[in-house]
Length: 358
Image 1 (tube, rainbow, N blue to C red):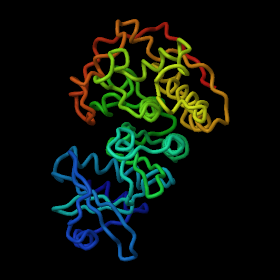
Image 2 (spheres, rainbow, N blue to C red):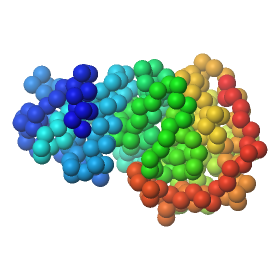
Image 3 (tube, rainbow, N blue to C red):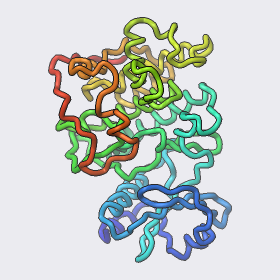
Image 4 (cartoon, one colour):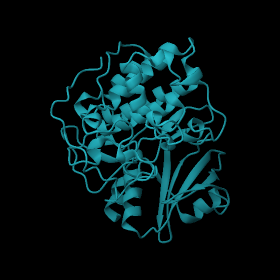
């Protein structure tokens, strides 16, 4: 930890003291929320800049320290409009904290899953494009490629103008561009969003983030969780249902995205559906780069017809919902240990075809 702190102080983030953060947060009096790793408090700098202060629990815990170093070690090196801004951090005997820009409209998931008033579809499309830009920057524009590992609606924060910012870099990893694959120690990601190679003995690349973005995009399109056991069985797993409608040429005549398929949104929705299907291709090499995803979502390039990304599941007897996405097995929380959903029932199909989405 000491070496890490010496290295990080050469970069931009400011190192706060506990006393400074007590002043900023009015003695940690305004709780914004809490989770498994810590609590987040609202704070105000002397120049009236509003910030969010994330206080990590169990500061002596190795896992907490690793999350802290991942967040500071990645966000401290990046600057992009669609990434949450890091102001600084605090490491003292009784406090480990991270100070971010305040995101006044919270996380994307509450707008997708009807916890608050839903957003207009044009705005959701803008959020999808902005999120894709942020991930593309991490993968393709940083000096060292950054893999996020946990792209999902809860980790996309919205500012006061509903501009999206990718957040929560606790699982992120830096890698050199000449490293084609990353060695993994323990499970990463969230069941339902994590790419197959993360829960199988396959090499891992930055394309795992592309897969997760595709799953996020499906939830933007449908305005529902990808797994929903309160709908007819054939619709339980939304991504596969979408593919079956596309494959049968029934997308326009289905209730797939209800009112979103009004003539006004038809082209936009169809484009987003194709992008999502390309992003969740089984083989990582068949998934597009995120810079290409941005262009496809913006409509500046043509998108070829996607391949069936779920052929491997269908070949193994899953007509609808695979065991890995069952609500009994995956509760939507981040998996950071070997308790990750068991995937031993899936075999590799060497006959799956790869292709180019553009």
